[in-house]
Amino acid sequence: METTTIDCGKECVNGCVLGDRCPNLQYVEQANKFMQETSLDQMHEIAEIARRKKLSKPTKWIIPDDF
Image (tube, rainbow, N blue to C red):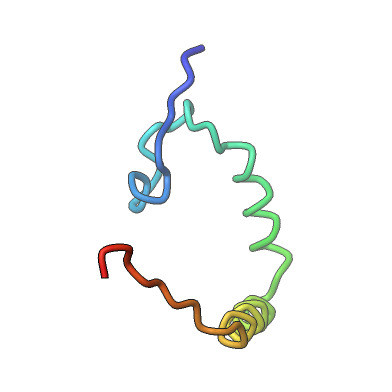
């Protein structure tokens, strides 16, 4: 079977473009299980914790080399 390299984050925004040849099919079952077993309130709580964690990190300054 031919392996295909694709950036799913960009190419598959509206759905998988590779179908049965998708290299990430193994994660579909895990994602479906998570969505079935986790309430929407729990998902919001997880997202809020991640948001707070990101906001608590210090600002990372990026200075261009040609400045």
